[in-house]
Amino acid sequence: VYDSQRTGQIRVLSFKVGLVLLCKGHLEEKYRYLFRLVADTERRADQRRLGLLLHDCIQVPRQLGEVAAFGGSNIE
Image (cartoon, rainbow, N blue to C red; front, side, top):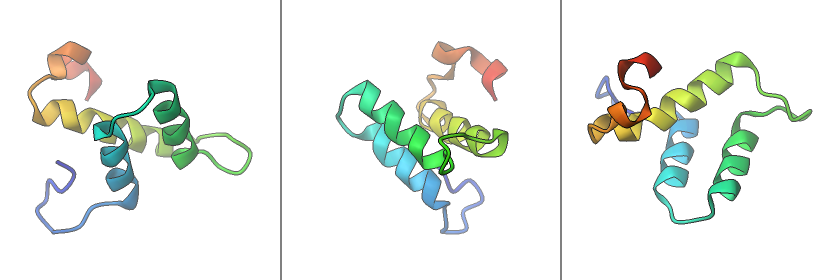
C-alpha cells in the first residue's frame, strides 16, 4: 500500500498510520493519536505534515477500491 515504488522501504509515519487505521479502537482516540504524529510541540501541524497524513490515510481505501465513498478522484 505505502511502497508504490517497490523499494522495500516506507516512511515511519506511513507505517504508524497504517497500523492505526487497521486496528480496533475508539475513533476519537485514533484521531488524537494521528494528530499527535504530525503536530509539533506546540500542538500545531504544518501543511506538509498534514498533507502526508491525509495522503497516507486515503491509501488503504484506495487499494481496496473504495475511494468513491470518500469523494472519488477529487481527494487525490
